[in-house]
Image 1 (cartoon, rainbow, N blue to C red):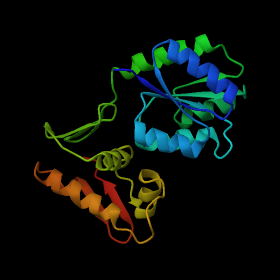
Image 2: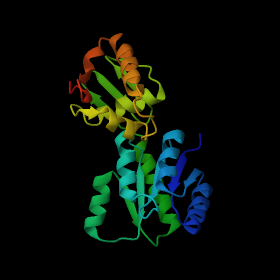
Image 3: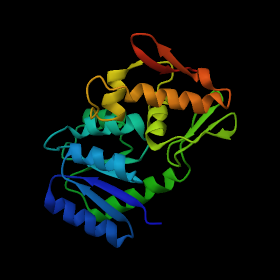
Length: 222
């Protein structure tokens, strides 16, 4: 199966060059000209790697990286015109796996893509007690048994699992998992939580999701 690369870049000249080089290397390239389109494409297409321009017209690239990292462990390579060391450190802290300073050689970018994809093949595993989540494979197990979650349930559980014990309000969950697209007074978050609990209850894992009355939800730490 072709590996999918999502390129979030507003410069059409750079987009054309990078698309050509990656396609020549055998990858399928999806392109987005801004952060909002990029986040939507990442959610809908589940790419194997993201190449992210830092200077987007609507969002700072570091903010896009942070949003991607909250629900996904997809490798992120950032393209930046800034060469300051503290800025590069901030990018890595925001969730980037690698960065390249503009101008860059497309052949080097392709090489770095290959390195990140090789690393990804080993796969991240999030383990919290009896709960085990494989973000790349989009698999979830509890007590050794697979938990069959819908795509959005999986995104929601992974989001909570990245910071177990932290209480998230419904508004935070709506903003990060649904990108703020739910109507006001929606009960979609509560419905998804109830569905996940029902599935986990069958495996003796009902209590792993904690409700904090009047605030929101958290994943127990063990």
